[in-house]
Amino acid sequence: MDRGHKASRTLEITILSAENLTLDRKSVKKNAYVIARIDPINYGSTKADFEGGCNPSWNEKLTLDMPFQTSFVTLEVKCKTGSGERVVGMASLPISDISGDYTPESYLHFLSYRLRDSRGEKNGIINVSARVKVQVESMSPAVTKNPMRNGCSSSWQQPTLGVPAGHQKNYYGGVVTGVPIWS
Image (cartoon, rainbow, N blue to C red; front, side):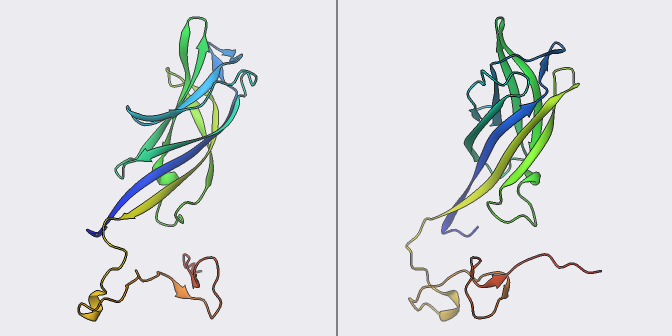
């Protein structure tokens, strides 16, 4: 990142549903919710599902600020019971699953992860959709000098990566990008 820009990442994660949740080998009846946690102070939570029982549905979008060094997000399914809150299961969502070398920026991924209870045993599945958004904020005036023009004041744009795609402008700005496949 150059000195004139500040970058930040945002995680948009939609907690869709869970399947086959149990507590003490009995199906969860109600009050299940999810906490998506990046670190101890950066997290979001869904509302409790009162009707889904062992197959709750939330469909709630959580937006979290995500430092660049973040390697995973913890998904923790909890249940409110008469004796307090109990952890039903946890899963780790690796950031590499949603942001990597060949993944377009802001691409929406639909993912399912196995939940594990406090003993490490399988305890259901959680379904989510997620995307990473990178925002670049300019910290300098809008017009930047072109380093190739020896100080002239014309505006300069970052070169576009990709191969020019003819004379038509398309959604991707007139370039083709992709991963070459050789057989």
